[in-house]
Image 1: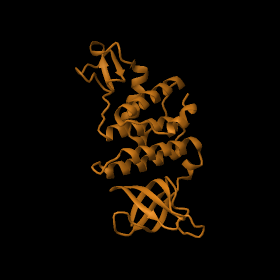
Image 2: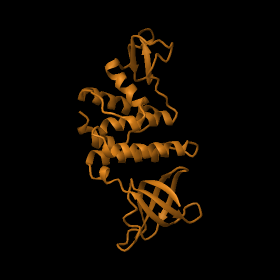
Image 3: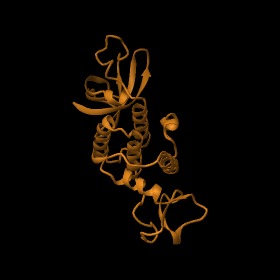
Length: 237
């Protein structure tokens, strides 16, 4: 059997669904035939964010033959903010990963993220950890140690247009820039081992600014903003 995390479901014909499941081998699409029927043994499994074990038929668009629920993530799904964040993560993976990516690494990180999201009391900070690390995973490194031009480590600012730290000498007055009150928490979110993540002592305004920067970086590098971010906006204060 193959293990996977359901990213997305789409109604297919009268009683079936298309499932898009993230696995250690990438995104697998499949048909779950008859899954919308009340007596289907797979009905409760075919839900976004469920972690399942599954057996598929062969072919380019296989059929889900059998499946077993590993975790439906009730600690996340029963919390509005956490479930919305999970939807954002699902969308990011679904829309950005390619066949060439390191799927075992990302799948393992996704599993660590869901474990941390279950218990954290700072879900909006943990969301930043995933998003910033996801940009790195996709090839968009965010230098947050030194000036990305000359390597200086003093008088630094985070330049959104550059997507990196710059020193006073290489700062562009026409770009939006943020001092260490912003880039130091960003540095933590970017580099922290998610299994040891702890809530930071940041103000609501600081957190709001970092979310704004992350949204700009996603739009700049990925070309879109996850829809769930709009839903979360009122809670990011």
